[in-house]
Image (cartoon, rainbow, N blue to C red; front, top):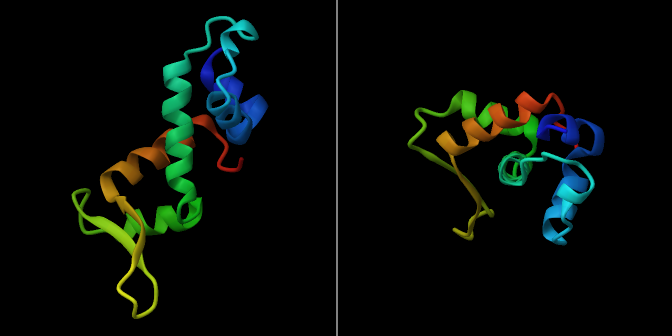
Length: 103
């Protein structure tokens, strides 16, 4: 089974759980490309930092792929959820290639 089909059937959350819990998914599905599965799950996680739809807006409004986007907590100066625009753009493309944006 290819990785895209696996994700379409089981979703990103289940794939993430399997990877994090060191489940050897190759025993269940022959020829499953585990490194590719890790990449796609990582891409999905990146798009979930700000939410998939918001991530698309961030990329659309970014000046270039070399920039970073971060969220600041009020006047505290504390930055959280910083992402590189180029990496986020690639992550969105990866997730869209699977055909599902939800978990």
